[in-house]
Length: 367
Image (cartoon, rainbow, N blue to C red):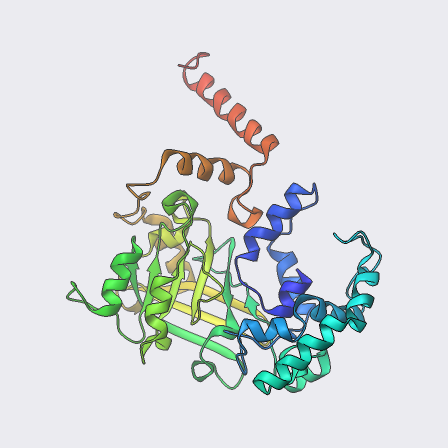
């Protein structure tokens, strides 16, 4: 998690780290753990799409890659150097070797000679990163549309839409879609009498495990990226993004819309407000009105409570049975924020509770 924060890595690690922890028999991190780690760990890597110079990944590799970042983290006292690595040596021994290795010297020299890029401008120490204006990559907003949390790669937003106070503020009408292909058509203005416009908030629901198997939401973000007004469109989804995605894209919104998440109760022209503070690493995603009219917090809460799910919300018609089963089992194991894993004890407990409920409802027999 420290390395992810220092590198400004993909939001997909929110799935991988809990899954690895579960497989190792360790406590899985929760939302507050992610927030804490990102507050204490400075970003040291300047790479796409985080900036500020946007070095390609190959230059990060040539500048020293993961072990180079870990050298800096060790120097800051953030690593346990006595842990064993896959080499059979301790982390300290491995990093000591790296620091004086011919491989490190050759790679960094080649980067300088071939690309005229200084390695220390790609992977920086904490003081240099601070002088370069580097900020933490991810923010974890919450709100009445994301009560269990969400994530945004805040440094991947165009700087022109972020205030001088490092706060992104957007309030606009919702455009709700249950299929990413329909959202893309609206972005392109094809086959619709209401294309997406600057200021809109695309709300893509049913894109989590139970809807699509949690496919990557990438096509619509890519379409917006190359439009001159695309940076002025925000996107909310209960699905996930790739590390390539950029813009005001909030993903992993929980709970999932197909399981009662309030994002599944949003309607076209609801008023959505998104606030992302890249300095304080805080954020909010809220319904603040309906039919274009602002409402107070209590009225918005009551409105969300009174509504049923969006009428078009349903699992994808072609979702395979084994994917549906995986989605149900990972949900009973803690869901996406717990790594989409199989926690056998929790699955068994859930099944037994369900069987007990059926016995009660059926007068003691399970049909």
